[in-house]
Image (cartoon, rainbow, N blue to C red; front, top):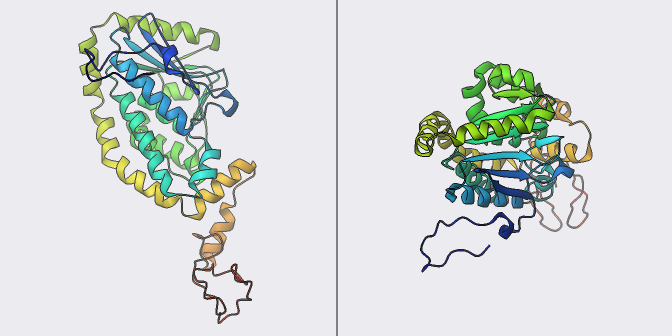
Amino acid sequence: MTLPTLNQKTYFDPGDPEDFDFQEILYEKKDWVARITINRPEVYNAYSTLTLREMTRAFQDASWDDAVAVVVLTGAGDKAFCTGGDVKEYADRYTRKPRDYWKWMGDFVGCHDLLRNIGKPTIARLNGVVAGGGNEFNMACDLAVAAEHATLLQVGTRVGSVACGGATQWLPLMVGDRRAREMLFLSEKITAQQALEWGLVNRVVPADQLDATVDELCQKLVDKFPECLRYTKQQVNFWKDLAWHSTIGHARDWLSLHYTCREPYEGMKAFVEKRPTRVREMREKAAAGGSSEFLWGPWTRECSRCGASGIPEEFRFCGACGQPLGDGA
C-alpha cells in the first residue's frame, strides 16, 4: 500500500484490505467489523516475523478506520487459533544469533501495544489450539469466544523459554495466582470449558455456532457509543498496562541473553526434532557439580599449539588445529 504524502488532507485515511497484499494474514472489513486472520494453518497458525509485521499494519489500519467498530482476531482453519511464535524460526535464527531476538521482541511488543491501544473492542475467536504466544494474543483482546474443541496452554517451560510476553503479566490478573502458576509452570493444556470457569474466555459454543456468536457480540458492540467504549477500554486496561510496562523491557533483555544458553537450544531443538527434552540429564549434570548452562561445559580451555581459547571444558581436541587437549592444555 502507498503511504500518505505530506500534502494529503489527512495521514489517517484507512486503506482497502486488498491493497495491502498481505502474505501471512487475511484482512477483511465488513459490516463495521475488521477481521484479521493468521493464515498459516500448515504450522497451526504460528506467527513469523512477517506475520507480526502484517498484523501490526492491519491493527493500525483498523484503528484509523471510522467504519470499523470492532476488531476480531482469529486463525485460519479449525485446528488452531494461534500456537505462538514459529519455533523453527527461533531455532534457526535466534539460537544462532541471540542479539536478533532483542530486535524481534521489538516487533512483538509493538504489535501487542497496537492491539491493546487500538481504541475499539477486540474479540479473540478461538477456533482450536491456543498455545504460548497465541494465548498472549487471546489475553490481549477484550473478549474471547471459544469453540468447544479449543484447548489453551502456555509452553515456555517446555521449550526452554519464559512466557513473559503477556502470560506472566496477565494470567494472574485473569485467572488468579495459583491457576496462573499451574499453567505457566506445568505447560499443560486446559479445556475451553475450564478456561470459561477460570475466566480466560467469555463464551464456549459448539464449533458450528462460533461465527454466529462472535457476530452477535460484534453487532451488540456496534450499537454502543464509540468514544465511551474507547475510554472504558483505556480505563479497564490499567492493570494490564501496569504489569506489561513494568516488566516487558527487562523481559526483552533477559530473553535475548537467555538465547545464548543451553536451555532454549535444547528445548527448541527437541521441539523441531519431535523428541523429549533432556532436562533430567541437564539436572543430573548440575547435581554432580558440572555446568548445565553450557552444552559442552564452560569455555575455559586453551590450545597450547595454536593459541585458540574459549574452548569448551569437555572438549578433548582443539577444534581449530586438532591438537589433543590434555589436562594441562
